[in-house]
Amino acid sequence: MERIKQAIEKVKKQNLAAGITPQSGKNKRSNGASKGPDEFSYVNTKTIELDPAHLEKNRIIVYNQQDVKSTIFDILRTKILSKMQENGWKTIAVTSPTQGCGKTVISVNLAISMARYNDFSIMLADFDLKKPEVSKNLGLITKHSIMDYFDGKVELEEMLVNPGIQRLVVLPNNKAYKDSSALMSSRKMAAFVEEVKDRYASRIIIFDLPPLLATDDAIAFIPNVDCVLLVVGNGMCSKSEIEESMRLLSSKKLLGTVLNKSDDEWRGYT
Image (tube, rainbow, N blue to C red):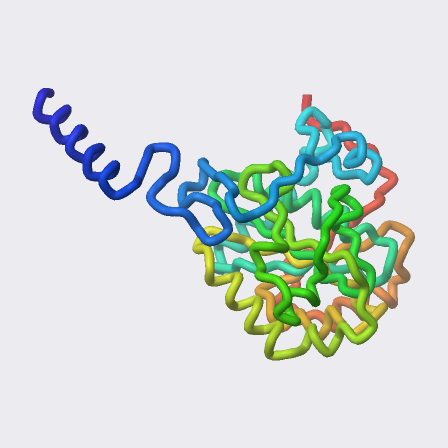
């Protein structure tokens, strides 16, 4: 027993000499998140606490874990993560056939639910450059737009926001762009996705994209991601619009579909 104690003390002294403490972990990542999945601190990334009332108003129900309806997203999260782990996927795009299906609400709720799954860190990127709404749904007031980053005016770390939730960072956008499809299909965009995907071994990135049939942005960007989740709003899309959307998506990349705005009442499991 005494020899074990001596060995432990020796390791502690070596760690202290290297500047490592039990709280800090072995090293700090560039965005200030520690290496361990359970202990995260944000140094360079701005942290903004969310307003529960604003989230409830915008149907971000997962933030309140007491809400029985949040279980819906936990089930969706588990199904998605299982498939992504099975295939070694790290990037997922969320889109819809047409506008009004609620794909951003699904993206935000899914990101929060995934962040509570301790094995991963999550980045939620607002890449609906025609009508960015992630910040609006979360109640974030941001200074920079995504084009500020791609124009070299700011570093990525200056744009990222931690919304007061462990293992979650948001890449927000506060400005719409008319010529967004040129950026979405560019080599610069492909290089960006590869860079953020490879930066962290345990990170999953959710890209909130525009509707498939409203603009060519999503079609241009989807080759950069591993898989796609298609959100269909109940009564918001015609049969032909759904069929056309599924035709545009490769069967290998279509992870699945989500029926949103259903009239069915979720009763949960009690």
